[in-house]
Structures are given as structure tokens and as C-alpha cells.
Length: 458
Image 1: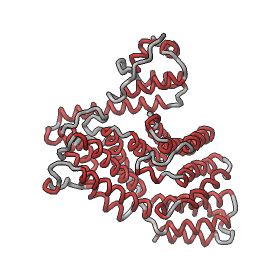
Image 2 (image 1 turned 180 degrees about the horizontal axis):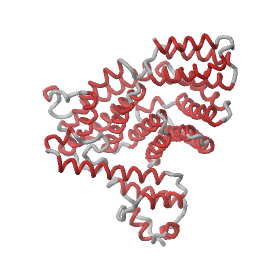
Image 3 (image 1 turned 135 degrees about the vertical axis):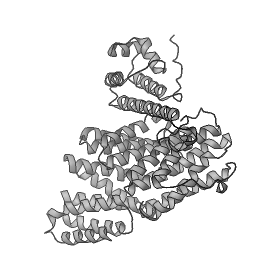
């Protein structure tokens, strides 16, 4: 009777992580190592060694695996991340050799953070101070100095971690209600500076994962807020720090959230292939994620495919998201996933279908139905989400349906956009104004376009 394969440890390195995923895809396709090896012209033992992280791979071989296993680009994209991680480590090594050690904490890039990024590391102060280098790199573009050491605790206590959580919860609430521009951005910078400085303070080992998770969550909130303010370079830095903190804490749920925001930002700024990479990297160990987290990332995939005008893959991703979301149960998610309810799910999928309609000629009915559900069910704590869905529905009706209905929906959305400080909301209403230009002779359309102009300028 064949022995059960020995469990693999994906926490040792990115290469080991790739090996785990290679085995997962191979077993999913019902192939032995010998069978897969024959397909890519390697021996079965070589396949085993790659899966165990004992034998090197390369981009060409990763592509061959992806094709042989019909992984639809997942293994290609994951290997790009393996290579990027290796490049970052190489650059860090060069810096450590060429720069004085006293300056090292101010020079590490945000994607490297100096420390091991998996939960099996020991909790030494040295490693955490090395990790803090990433926080320093995030702060430096904003012209921020680290807090005076006298204002920091001597030893991290649970109360300190709770304060970081309270800060991130408050900022997230403000961001959802008022947008990421103005007060939210100004208030969050000082909180983030203080929180990242805690990573350099002595911390009991039992609190380390909680500290990194709390700081990582704050980084994700900061990244989402910066994205909404179109501070895109800062957004990428914060969100990358959120990924690193999540991996350092061994928190796959926080990592999924950070990857989702990285995906959404990339898609928004016209880089859907990068967005797809982030979304699928977030799904790499989907067995460790809740149904809502998986659905959230499949929605990001759908939006990426929609921007690439791939109707079949986008619809397939939405179907997969719907199927998984239906399995969600109350109480299984982290607090930050409370936003992802039925309204958010229908809004996200409705936005993907909106792009399919305008870019690829897909039927507008499914998008309209989902956007209507999102508008009706978003509470007052999510004004921006409701406004974004309302603007999309108005644009959809203006482009494909009744312009009078579009005017009514558009005015309702503008009532809320006027309460926000959100660059994303502004861009969406400007898109509505452009779409409405061809319907300006219809009653009320010209008035709507003028109101959009004055709202944007206010």
C-alpha cells in the first residue's frame, strides 16, 4: 500500500511555498510525480525535489508546469513572486555589504522588511527591529520622523496592541463614511508612525503575532485610504507592508485582505494583469481562508478579467464567487471582514459585470440587478460603497437603458458623492457625465451633467 506523502512546510521560503502549490495542483489533476515529469521532460524524483524545495525551478519550467496542470496562470504568477522575493533579498544583501550598519534600518525597501516573513521565526528584538526597516521606508516619503523614544512604552503590553486596533477601526469607519481624502489621511499618518514604531519595542513572544497583525491591519487601512485619495505610490507601500506584517504574524486572513486591496488598486489604475496576480496570490492557500475571503478575491479576479474583456473567465470567476459566498456562516471571519456582506458582494460583482457590459457588450441586466441590491442594502456606514454602486447603475442606465431613470439614480448618487472626499467617487461621476453627453437632449440629462460639474468642483 503506497505511503501517504509527507506533509510539506510552505513557511520555509517562497520556493517551498511554490513546491506546496505545485503538489496541490498535481494532486488536483490526479497525476503522479512520474506522470507530471513525463509531461515536462523531468524525472519523477526531480518533481518530488521541486515540491520539497530541494531543487531549483525557473520561469520556463514554472510555465511548463502551469500548462501541463491547466493552472490558468496561477503557477506562472506565483513563480514571478518567488523571483521578485529573491531579487529583493539580493538587493538587501548588497545594501548590507555596502552601507554602514547604523543606517540599515532606514534603507530597506517596503517589500523586504528584513525579517523572516513566516510564523516559525523566533521573536527576537533584533528581528523585529530589522522588520521595522520597512516601516521606516514607508514613513520617509511622507517626511515623517519616528516618535521620540520617550513617548513609546518600554515593553509592549496588550493595551498597546488594543490601541492600534482601535485606531485602525476608527480610521476604517471614517474612510468608509467620508472617503480617503482630507481628515482621514491627515489623522492616519500620525497613528501609523506611532504604531510602526512599536515594532522596535521589546515585546513578549506571545504578543508578537497580535502586534504584527494589528500594525498590518492599520497598514491595510492606510493603503485603502491612500488608494481612495489617489496617493498610489503610498498605497502600494502601505499595502505591501500589510502583506509583510500578515506573513510575519502567520495571519492568512489579513494577508488575503491586503492582497485584495493591492489587486483592486492595480485594476483601478489600468493594470488588470497585475491585479489578477495579486488576487491569485491571495488565493494561493485558499484552504486557509473563509468563504467570504475567497469570494472577495474571486471578485477581484472577475474585475481583472472584465477589464481585459475576457467575458468567459470573468463570468466564471463571478460564478465561483457566488458559490463560495453562499457557504459563509456567521462568526467565522475577522472583524475587518464585517464590511463584506450581501451588499458588498453584489456591489463588487455588479461592478465587474458593468465593465463587461461597457467594454465587451455583455448584457446589462445582471449588472443592474446586482447594483440595485447593493444600493438598497448598503447601510449608512458605507456611504462611499453605496455612492459608487449608485453612480455605476446610473452610468449603466444612461448607456444602455432609460436616460430618465439614469437621471433619477444619478441625482441620488450625487447626494452622497457630495458628502465624500473620494477621488474614486469623483472619477466615477465624471465617467457618468461623459456617458451622458450623447443623451444631453433628453429631459433632465443636461441638468444632471451640470450638477456633476459643480459637485466635482466643490
